[in-house]
Structures are given as C-alpha cells and as structure tokens.
Image (cartoon, rainbow, N blue to C red; front, side, top):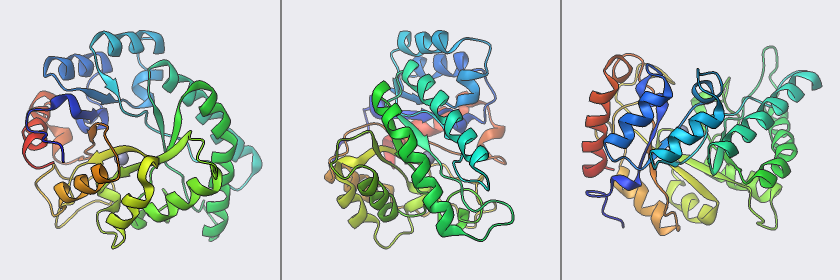
Length: 283
Ligand code: ZN
C-alpha cells in the first residue's frame, strides 16, 4: 500500500470541501501553494465564474494540478422525454467543459424517482438510457463517465444507483467489451457500510476511476451536508484504500467534504491545513 505521509502529489481536493466560498482561481492558488497534487472542480465555478472555461483550464495547468474529476451531472430521470433530454443535453455540454479543463472523468449522479412517481426500477432504466446516450460523446472527447453510487438513504431523491455492485452491473451492461469510457467513482461516504464493499472493489478493478475520502460522523445530522473530516468518524479509511490499491487503483485520493455547519464555515486555508494533516496520517 502506498505511503501517503509524504505524497501530497497523491492528494486531490474537491472544491466543494471549501463550501464554494472562493472563486476557483483563488482555490487553485491555495492548492498549488500547499503542494497539493490535484483538484476536482464543480461546474458552477468553471462554467459560471468570471473567467472563461479556457482561462480556468490554463490556471489549473499553470498551477501543475491534476484534475481528478468534474462535478457533476444533471439527472437523466424525469417524467417526460423532453425533461430527460434536457438532462442529457446539459451533461453533454458539461463533458465538453470537462475535456477542456483536462478532467479524465465526469461524475455522474443519477437522480431517482421524480415527484409523483414510485417507479424506482423505471428511474434506473432511464438512468441507464441516459448513460448510453452520453457514452460515445464522452469517449470521443476523452472523458469517462464516472458512475458514483450514492448511499441508499438518497434513493428517494438523489440517486437510484446505490451500491458498487450495482454500478459494476451497469458498467458491464453499457460496456460489455470493456472498451472503457465508463467506470466508477468510489466515495467512502456512500459505500463504507456495504457488507460487499471489499469484494465489490476487487470486482470493479480497472473500472475504478476515482476515490473520494471523508468520514462518517456519529451521530450524523444531515444526509448530505454533514460529512466528517477524515479521522473524525467511523470509517476504516486505510482498509478501504488497501482494497482500492489491491484492485489496481493508482490514482489520487480526492478529499470531498460537504459540511454546512462546520468546515464550510471555516477559512478554506484552515480547512486545507487540517485536511493535509489527516491525509498524511489517516487516509
Ligand atoms: Zn464523491
């Protein structure tokens, strides 16, 4: 297993960790100054900020940062063809921006049953259809679709894709010949509880496109926005990373902490300082 104690080049930071307090140029500078290796930016910062996508791409390149992923997809579930098509079109545009900033993958959050529907299986079929319609475009521009299974507590609204095994199944269905262009983002917050976790990581193998770390707090106070800093919760991070690396994952470990009541209220430089310490010691 890799020793991370002196490997900040293997640390990436998802910009949501800072609560979107700063424009991305300032975040890029903070990460580069602290010798952090990577960044995973959000669409709103890249596509809706003051600078053009090309300018942000240049800032990231000039800072020497590796992009570990681009966040995140619109849902491709919905009651009408028109709504589902709008999600697909939006995702296609995002994939182009991802390519421009050098992101190897685009994080896919699938959506789930929509208002008034109880058809979870239908939402899953719509999601697979949406992925199928993006796959060739992603392949053409060199951006893989990274399916991120979300914790089953989100199955009612945010994601009908809830386990690694299910993500593997969708990958196999969409890419039976393993041509690539589709894989999995493994986020400890969503998958740590799974009895099949380690077996599924092994099965996923080279489908693993990203590894996101934080911690699960006890008690947790919010289903989305109360993630813990690594080391503050109950997740056995080292054992999960060991499985990831045994499965062949050799990419960066991306710190991703949604924390409305704690870390987002702090100065990003202070949050990064703690994240770096924890990265070296507990990830
Ligand atoms: Zn994640």
